Amino acid sequence: MGLLIATVYLTTLSGAFFAFTDWSGVGSFNFIGLDNFRNIFQRTELLSSLANTLIFAFGFLVISNVLGLAFALALNRNLKTRYLLRTLLFMPVVLAPISVSYVWGFIFAFDGPLNQLLGSLGLTSLQHQWLAEPLLARGSILTVMIWQNIGFVMVVYLAGLATVPIEIEEAAALDGATRWQRLRLVVLPTIRPAVGIATTLTLIQGLRVFDQVMALTGGGPAGATETLATQVYKQTFAFGKFGFGAALALLLSLLILAFSVLQQLATRERA
Image (cartoon, rainbow, N blue to C red; front, side, top):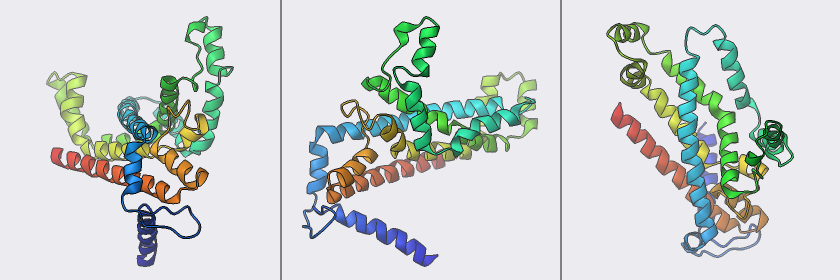
């Protein structure tokens, strides 16, 4: 186990080292200090990629957790078909993200099922080039991310809801508490660990979004959906700038680490 952990960290540290070089992936290299990082923050397209990464991460964090909690509350008790519905909602989680994204790419195509459905309903004004317009392209990617992972978030919240004592909920209801009051004052404080886990995992997943962007838009239109993860891939393998790609990867790793620590601290303070 120690050897395995050492291998993982040594590989990570070697990648971090090359972030301070101009290595192209072959041959010799020069140590250039912080030049790669200065270059990152001086290039508009990379700052735009950073902004897109944060938009995807926080949009995914908020929407998936709200919907995941809503589904968990709806399928927690009493509904006879809850086990079947839970299975159906969870099934997309086990599929490969790249495969799911290609299927959604077909759905979002201009002559695809979505626009055909809108046309058959007489809603031709709502037909769009979903992946060719910047704002709609971001929304389409976010939709695919949420669709595939909503089942996972739901399962985390279902595990948390299993710890809520029914007696306390029933006592609150007998005292006249509304559904919203029971959710806010009884349920949410009890499932706080589940909230911490779900929000942290979705935030990390959102920050490193890659498959959906590459399969649906390739970073387009005109770089409107580029993220740090896609830039790492392109700079490293498409442009042969291994050192610069390593700097982007290090920046993304530090970003994930910083937000994860902040999220854990926020959860701990409320516990």
